[in-house]
Length: 323
Image 1 (tube, rainbow, N blue to C red):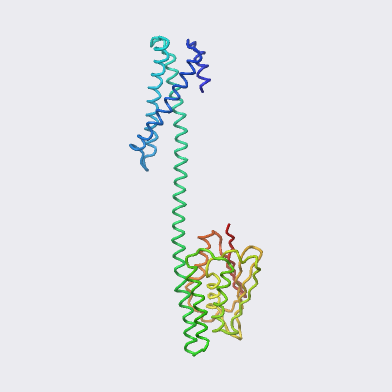
Image 2: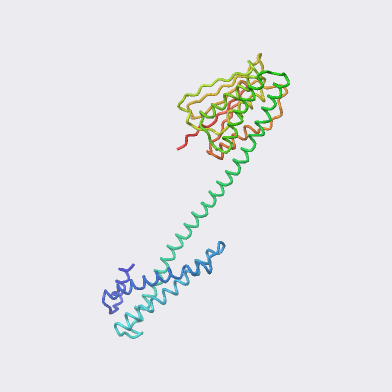
C-alpha cells in the first residue's frame, strides 16, 4: 500500500521528494495506529457492553476516521506548508490523496480489529459453554452417585436380615465382609473412575455375601487377563450389574444363575448371565443400569451396550485407559 501511494504521487506529478512522500505515508500510518490504540480503552469503558458490541465497533470506526482525517491534515500541513512553503491550493492533491490513504489504512486496521474481536468473543463464548457443560456434568455425576449408597445398603440389609432371622452362625462373618464392601463404596464414591483391579478386589467379598444366601444357586466366573487390571471402570459397576441379574432371574440350586465376567477384543468388560426370568419379578426401579449408563456417558462419552436374547442378558462396559 505504501509503494502504491508513492506511485500515485508521481502519477499526479506532485512535486515532492520520494523520501518526503514515504515519510508522509509512515507518519499517517503511525498516527492512525497510535490514535486508535490510545482511544480504544476509553471507548471500551464508555460504550462496550455485552449487548452493544456492534455499537462499540461502529463508534470506534467513526472515531478512527476522525483520527485519520486529523492525522492527514496535520501531516500534509507540516510537510507541505511548513517544510516546503506550499500554499493550501498547492497542497490540494496531496491532501486528498492522504485523506483517502488515511481512511483506507483506518479501514484496514478496523477490519483486522473486528476479526480479532469476534474471534476472541467466539473463543470466550465456547469456553463458557464448555465450563457450563463441565459444571452440569459434575452435578449430574454427583446426582447419580448419590443413588448408589441407599440402593446398595437396602439390598444388602435384606440379605443380612434373612441370615439373622435364620440364626445363621455366619452372620458375623457376613457383617465383616459387608463392612469391607461398604468401606469400598464410601472410599470411592467421590471418584469418577477406579482401576479394574480395585473393582475386582471389591467384588470378591460382595460375591461372598451373596453366595452365603444363595449357596449353589449362584455361580460367578471370571476370565480377565492381568493386562487389563490397570484399565478403569466406573466404581461399583460390577456390583450393580450382579445385583441386577439376581433381582430379575431365578436363583436356585435346581436352576443356578451363572454370571460370567470377562473381557473381549473391543476393550470392553462383559457381564453376562443366563436368562431365566422370575414369574413374579421384583418391581424394577432401573436405578442400576441407568446409573451406570449415565456415568459412562458423562465421563467418557462412550455408551454401555446392552444385549438381550431369549437365553442371555449381556452388558458391555467400556474399559477406559487414562493418559
